[in-house]
Length: 290
Image (tube, rainbow, N blue to C red; front, side, top):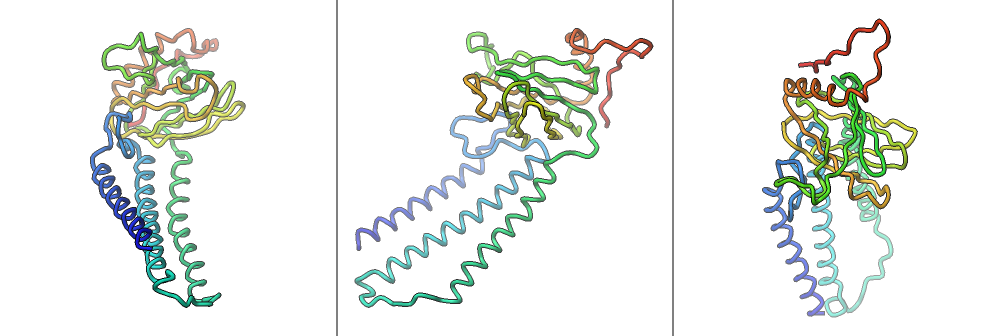
C-alpha cells in the first residue's frame, strides 16, 4: 500500500509540476506572425473579434477542467488513504447516500450550464455578420484554392502551394503560395465557401476561421482583421492524398493599400472577369467602408 500511495503522490507532483511549467509557457508562447512555431504550446495571437472570443472561452474551459481534475485527484488520494484495508479493516456496507447522489447530479448540471451560456453566445457571434462591407468567395479543389472578389469586378485566381525547391529565403515551407489573398483590415468581410469536388476545410487559426467547403453548398463565415500582417492556415479536412499541400496565405493590409491592390489585380486577372453587358458602365474599384 505504501508503494502504491507513493506512486500516486509522485504522479500528482509531476502533474502539478507540468501544469506550472505549462502555465509559464502559456504566458509567452503565442506568436504574432500568423503561423505556428516549434514548441509553441498555445494559440497564435488573435487578430479578429471571433478569435479573441474563442481564446476567452478556451480560458474558461481550461480552468474548469483543471479544477475538476484536481478535485478528482484529491478525492482518489483521500479514498486510497482513508479506506484501504489496513486503515479500514471493517468496510462500510452503505449502498446509498441521498445527499451525495443529489450533489453529483446537480453539480455537473450547473457546470454544463456555465459552459453552455458562453458557448451558444460564441456560436451565434461566429455565424455571420449582418452588414458585411465586402465579400470573398473561396472554392476548394483537389488540391488548391480558388478565390473570387464579387464586389470588386468578380475577378478570381487560383492559389497553389510553392514547391520546396522554388522557395525564396524567408518563405515558410508548406505554407507559401503563388497567389495569396489580400484583405483590408478593420473591415467586416463575408466569406462564402464551397467546393467543386470533395469536402475541404478553410481554416485560419489566428482569425478563428474553420469551416467546411462542401460541394453543391455555400457556407458562410465572416472575419474582421484587426492587425496588418501575413497569416497562414491549411485545409483541415481529410480531402485526399494532397490534403497536406493546401496552404492558405492571407495578407492583411490597410484599406488604401487594398484599393491599390484591387486595381492591379483587376488588370492581372482581367481574363477571369465577366464580360460587361452592353450599355453597362465600366467596372469600378469598390471602396471598402471606413
